[in-house]
Length: 294
Image 1 (cartoon, one colour):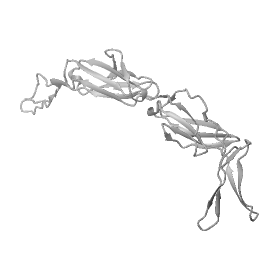
Image 2 (cartoon, one colour):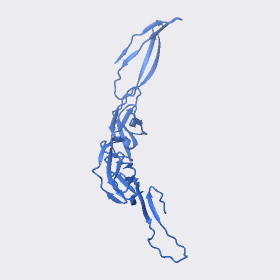
Image 3 (cartoon, helix red, strand yellow):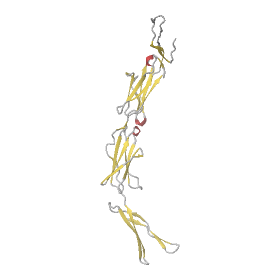
Image 4 (cartoon, helix red, strand yellow):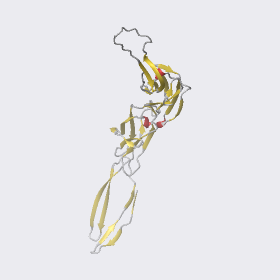
């Protein structure tokens, strides 16, 4: 079916006439046609002269909507590489498939077999990709919006850091000190454990949680101690893990103030020969120092 305008004839300044006609609509019959030839003829009946010109018009066909292959609902672990494949049927010319992660184009490998076009890309999964959208677009014409398909990444990730704080920062021996541990976000939540000189410590209460970045969970825990002078400078260690990667550790060293305590106490009685040299050793520690001897 075609609709052509009537020829418009206009005079030229230097004599003669110019005729113009527009083919505004043409419906192509036949689904397998890849191109049509359009011919325009100009006839001058006064001199029985015909001129004509052919124009080849390529017929495009939009590709079928792309679809992802595989289980899109499964959870993936941060640090792994996810291979994403999408396919599209038909299209003339064959479409170009492009895969995006959170709007960023990924290097996409194209393969064609018969009437099917497939695109593959590798997604390096990070904690920040949790909730990110992966999109596949099929394009074979710049004049129309490409059909697309999308799915959302569900990413599990381990904690990558632990922070330990002490209140008060400096404590007198025998007085109470509170230590707090906070994990970086993780999904699922982290399990926090305490040790002091390799001995497990029991927290005050069950760990608390709060929403964290990338859809993860921040976990917190507290313990209380009454350190002695010998504990000055020793580390209290908090460990976080959720089973996805190696545990991560954080520590805080205790600052315990105390009066001097003997490391090497001088003897109360010393036997010595008259005229012989006498050396008496004494060593003590205190916090703060230094220790003065008399």
